[in-house]
Length: 219
View 1 (tube, rainbow, N blue to C red):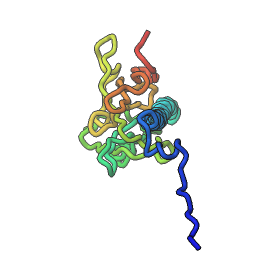
View 2: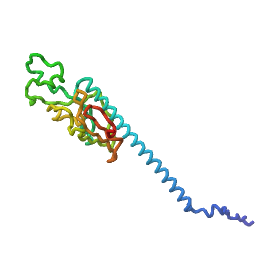
View 3: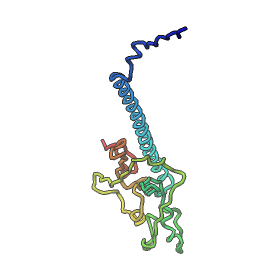
View 4: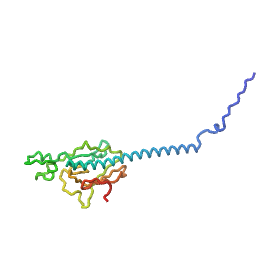
């Protein structure tokens, strides 16, 4: 008895011919991957832009608030750039810590009621005795400086060519913050630029001599 011969199995022609991906299929996959990468890149870029814009708007709002707080308390305040652990110049809100302590400890017939009164009349005593100290204001904080964002602060020249309308006391010129309100409503005029990788974020922020915070150039 002879063993029955089993005929060989024949694959369908479509399967037999499909040995790999066609060029068209490879091109389609590459296009899909490119589109996906572009979408991810746009998402990351827009996220950074939102963070930078949020920091910019928070900064302008904080400067306006500090201006009002300084005038209300008759307390010199400002914004100072301080180096953080990453070596970045981070903005911090500061206030003058009683620059007149040396005078107030001296015998006087009528002690001044406030620092502002003593600022107007120091009784002929030498201003060399004053040692200004600027302290961080814990109640007013700014968000963390976004990566790649930098601040530049430069003096602003006003129409009369002066930087302010008054003679500055030494404690406003030695170790003073880059952005400064005197506690009288007036300020040392400056222009502030917020940049991300050298590109300007928002418009230039101007602090005017009357203390106002103005976004953009004057009209």
